[in-house]
Image (tube, rainbow, N blue to C red):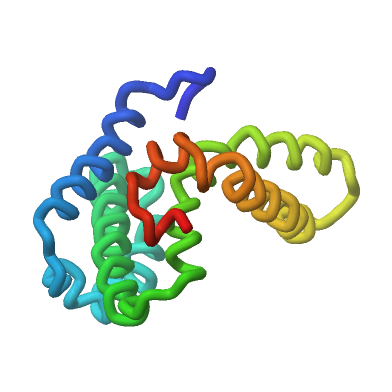
Length: 167
């Protein structure tokens, strides 16, 4: 991706596509979730067809990027539809996670790197290290959101002014 802290332009462009698509789709107001109506087809095709083909076409500089694109968009559309199908009932816990998600996204990298660095020389299996990173990072990030962000100007900046959400 990068040799330093600044990502390469093509990586920024890659993520910008998803950002602008999300912004456009949100403004579209697709409350019926027409985009994700075929989630039950998109997710299996992505997982059982596109994903394995990525490994078969690793050296192919034409087919592999096309399959990566297909896999990514099938997963995006499938996840939108799956979420609309199974998570339409308001939940305080999901609302809290949704409100905290941008903070967690912004702050996770330095914390995860720090915890990984602390575990680097320990002779533990990778899955145990990954579980430890999660066991440390998630409570610290959620705790920092609750104590430092949620009821502050930063919380209003990240989540907007919504009295129901910020209680």
